[in-house]
Length: 253
Picture 1 (cartoon, helix red, strand yellow):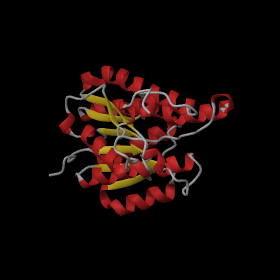
Picture 2 (cartoon, helix red, strand yellow; picture 1 turned 180 degrees about the vertical axis):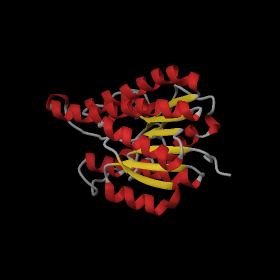
Picture 3 (cartoon, rainbow, N blue to C red; picture 1 turned 90 degrees about the vertical axis):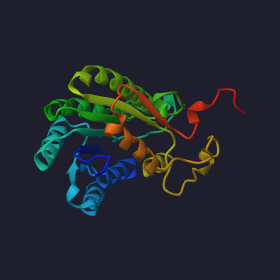
């Protein structure tokens, strides 16, 4: 029997990268999964690859009605929902004085508002299911600041705080809420944000204690633990996977 037998999960931003890795691992461990994204082609391909245990659902995480439709379909297809992974996110680099209001609101809309809508949308169905587990994907930019990503940092700090507040509210229903804080992970989102697929990011890894960038599958393993019963006493907490990025000192040479 798999580690997630009996679990029904909705994962946002699951068509590629960290979300896709989590979807694959969840299915391997016995879960039913709804892959939610706006990347229809990639999402449908992944659902087809995973077979009867997976469905693709288009979901713009900033849209209340689409959240309702995604949750309703999850329950209709698989009978309940007891796992949510708020993974969808966008990254934007710009200096503070060059960050437009539109850019700022776009990042906040997807990363912060999308997480809020996801949290709110699953309370009733998880309560009906007798409990559940929610993982909100924040970032090490939700632990410490970084220049040129003010909107992203604001959104990821907000996710960290919402996680704690939700955990305190929902614990009485057997619903656990934790945040995951990845460091620099080798995903298409990161490559797109820094200029495209061909940009060399290996130099970033050399600055870390482990000497390399992280892999999406490494984050998937942490998320898997947090939605499984193995983490039954974990809620309202922060779980960092960053290759040592936040272990450093400001005066490090």
